[in-house]
Image 1 (cartoon, rainbow, N blue to C red):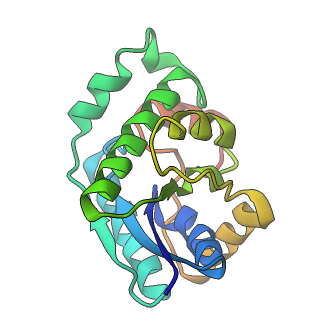
Image 2 (image 1 turned 180 degrees about the vertical axis):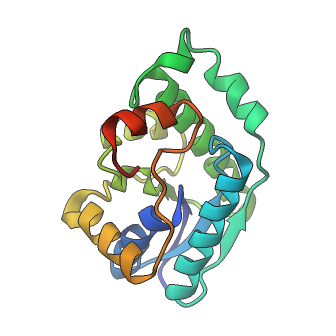
Length: 186
């Protein structure tokens, strides 16, 4: 049995190659899904259901679902001046990383898991160093860049093979505009 690691999962497609890599590297992943940033709540539910498909693909990995609290997330990101109109990968996103990584850290502590990481780094739309800069503030955070080793391309391929829903925006209502401008998947 490998070293247990809690994995904050933003969605099924991002979890695919990230989980595969962790297993190949000898970890025993416990999947954690909170993501109060995802809007609307129906979108959050669809992404959760697709993460369950990924869990089953890997033999029924444990999945922990946290409470959805979009209002708490909005309260945190609204501390950033002009947050509604900021582009992707700006201060609003940093606050979002903080929110999700803090939740994952607290969940790992609750479960007695010493290490945690996030699938956010597999996305070509996320600067992994920005995620790491937030993550280093939490004990046990593992800085794993899932884009490495062709992670993004593998995640796209696996998502297609598993017939996963692939969202067209990062998650929050403010990222929808950026996605429409970029015309791409999150």
